[in-house]
Image (tube, rainbow, N blue to C red; front, side):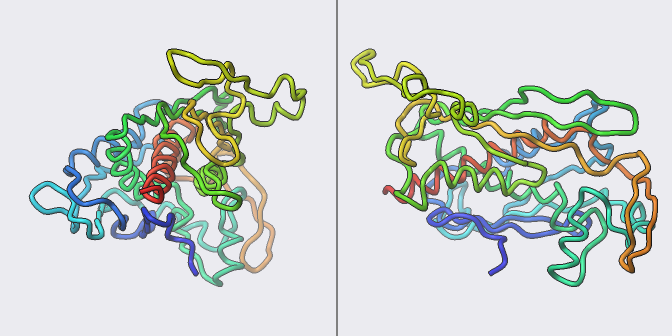
Length: 317
């Protein structure tokens, strides 16, 4: 089964390629009666767009969303919600000189091995442009979470040093405030397991940690355990090394997720590679590319986590 659908009760299917005519998302399982307007989706899409910094791509897309189904008189009907964004500023000619070459760091070789064919124009489905669809679906999930006073907010913790002609990576963090208690299923569908899958499904993400994360390997139990206390009439923990999740189930404390984003693979420096026929070749990537993708990954990661939370929330109802 092709991996283009995510979720169980709140199911998201994405489609489209970087240099195709359009990209879109279908959200199935959204509760009926939710107030929803294209402006709500557009706000999130604007956050994903490149800015004017030297780290961002010069490809400028309007990313104007159009809702095709699932809405009547400004409210969701309970039917599948279909959304579309048209590509208007693609320059496929920028990729014509590398159509028979495997770009280092990209998914070109892997796609060729799996399918025997690949869309060399910007990487097709492996392009970061695919995340437009995730943000559209995530915008709906955020509206649902807001009704539960739950907020998903991300930031870039740090980035590497940017050098001329090269790219750099970064570290991002997502904090979920007022997460509903009791979300998550035992064993295989743990909340943290689904969050990890959601984050790792984003291109360029190379790891995930929740709460104290990898640093627990250097702790003692007395240091990593979060002791309980009564605070304002509620049971709380003094610390939050667990990152708001115990036994795969949310505790009501802040859920804290961090993940590293690798440097964009398309760089201006010369690199060695081989062609489809196995011949050695040096390439220098041209076109419009981000020098650091971390800031643009943040709204995508927020969207994916929001989708996971809503999916588990609907399983509880």
